[in-house]
Length: 326
Ligand code: PBG
Image (cartoon, rainbow, N blue to C red; front, side, top):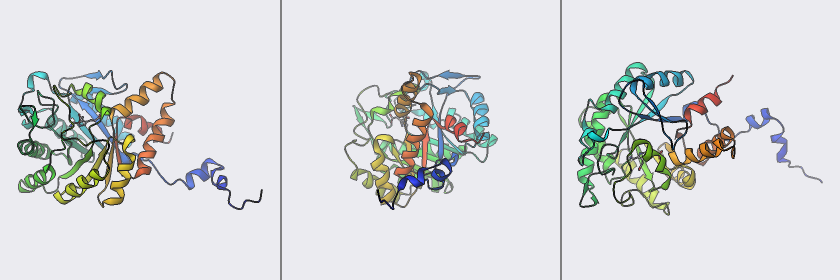
């Protein structure tokens, strides 16, 4: 063989491989989505998501302290709302003494440097289990957006760094931006779930929050998995309406969409490694079918390689430990 080019020369040792690595995953890339609930000293396992729990706020405080010590910089809150507080208007979403506003105030008081991201959508609060208001089986758009903008305002007032509309109503980013600015929250950023697909991979999350739609599905507002160009259209609109970061969700089955948005837009791109993606790895690892650490790192690296600037992932607590030099 007379081969001048031998790519294997750059794979000979771990030091060389690290030197020429083209993608890096670090603690600063991670956002930890965490489930919260009322009560004290609560740490309730979620059967569909091994390793994840619903935490009461006191337990959350201790857990966050541990993770901040390991390098956690950002988290996203998802509340389990008690059944008795759910109604058709999702009015608990507008309670400024509700679970999420209290969690934000606690976290920003205790950990001022930690970025706190709140979810703007009605499903955890709605007796219909939809992200918007429902009338005669239809998900209302403009009426929902008015409520979502109020919800975002309450979250901003409690101190959230980012409000993150995950509802996929038309025009919500613009309306939320306007209400925030008018109320003096021009510094509060919007992380828009821009290309959010109607996905089967959200199953375990809906179990975690008991937030599944009571009837119908989410296909009239979340995107069709068959479409990529439509994601660029959503991105153009969200960008024009004032979004600061654009998210693609889920991540693993949508790496091409992440890449398309990264190429087609100038805003930072977030990806959400969702509950179903997490559960597949966890259950396979529990059955000794996959090696959890190598598969998780490979998945998260692939999401970054596709173009994500940050990743929402339930694996964050594990990854922070794995990334920490011993
Ligand atoms: C709803 C919301 C969902 C997720 C985040 N926000 C579920 C849905 O749209 O039904 C899913 C996250 C996950 O599966 O990890 N606003």
